[in-house]
Image (cartoon, rainbow over all chains, first blue to last red; front, side, top):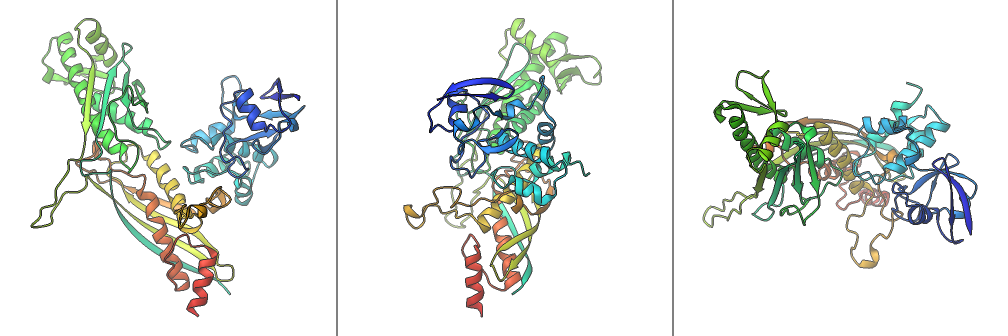
Length: 152
Length: 331
């Protein structure tokens, strides 16, 4: 099966089996370094990408699903060498340690703020419930998101 | 049925490293022609911030500016021996080795600068990437220039090597006396919890911690350890079965559905304070922090649950099932 989709703003075309996951295609065929394999069963969030702006576990998404759609990885957030707001907020709040969860965290946070610019604590907790982090204790990540909340 | 609140306290003394002569660290620092320094370290940066902390230590020991120091990790083929990143040891053990290596380089730079300036080495000071004659800080040579002169004019290798190990200390058979550890860090944890006696669910509302860490080489990184360790300890207290193969291999958790980690919503409010009491045995007084900040959390939570419901849970994690069972047995 030939699938064509927009990856971080540029059209790509790849051959995929019907059973291939989006994660497999991104990692093996398109060599996207920032998308991580964690659990492979949709609990850790290391593989999250945005599909048409919504976060999805790429390990549970069949590659064919994104045909004709727009896929965004964390590498697609910076423009002209300048980090996006959410990336800067993560940096300023020391919201990364080992970095394995970080791309998924940033994309989940971006999707949250895009649809809800002033989330409550509960809404932030709900949004991050599918992203596990072992290093930071989440507090700096939550602070990074809050620093961009428009309600301040 | 009620929601009962309780407060628990725990204190911790925690040794740094493996001790008993068993965990040596070695390093070699090499100056590059552009005046930068490569610190070769066989242990590994896990995200805790060694890359930054060890660069700070090297810069301080050499007298270089921290931007000119690069720490290279994990290549056991090109770096000298190190026992590894574990036991809260790397900043302390490798830091000590780096201090020695850095001081060797500092001496080389001062010797070369004394030849360039035709002054006695004793009259020179070095720091922050500059070398100057005492009392005349405005007239200085850059470390970069001195390195370059050493390599191209004075034919002097700008290389430093360092080693650290806590020597083995045998137990005195008469007195039982021994010197088993290189340094001890200390801490105290207070946990406030709420226990729902209907569901058995324990919620940690607030954690207060104070840790004595020797010297916080980089306070921001220490904070990162404290907050991360807090949540790891909270997971061990409430949800994580930390004996994954007990009692049989078939009982181990096979996924994050069974091995339940805390998520963002489980993070309690945390108030923390860092106390600095530099140790003589550490690089600029630093002690190990990594494990201590996780290990005291569960005891504080267990005590807080005891305070709330009057029953001491003696096996982690404190699952709702164990709370309800304990409450029933109490009645």
